[in-house]
Amino acid sequence: MLNNRAELGFAIVRPDDARLRATPFLDEPLELIAPAGERVAGWQDLERLGFIDHPDGQAMATSLLSQRFSGNPGVRRLPVHGFSNQISLILEPVSRGLGFTVLPRHAREAFGRAEAVQVVDGAPAVVDTLWLIHRAEWPLSARAQRIVESLLGHLT
Image 1 (tube, rainbow, N blue to C red):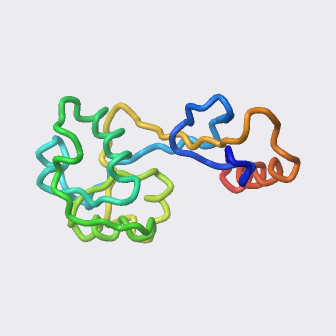
Image 2: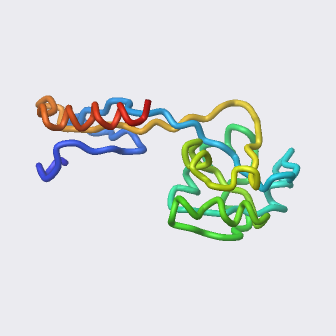
């Protein structure tokens, strides 16, 4: 973006560069997802289950677990029982009882076997923000603005 090869983009971390304007685009609640019927009441239960990791897994799990289980030793200390880099497959090992994971709500809602997993309720709610970014010195072109509006229309 800063090299003028893209007009707009999305980021999961708000850029800390005055040359970029970052606007909240979408808030995504994060969910702790475990196999259906598993009891998850404390950190020991997470250690017993093991973590199903994915490309954003460490960051998402750190965000959620640090809020829900204060004083925990960190997600990197949990046993990893699997990894998937395909969002449609991340919940498959969870549904088979192989571990737990942390994902945005939309990923869980897209999973075809909802009855095989459960959302572990807890407080506080943890929400990730997806940021729309573009160069700060000029507004988005009409074409780029139409794309953003179209994307927003599909999300509501």
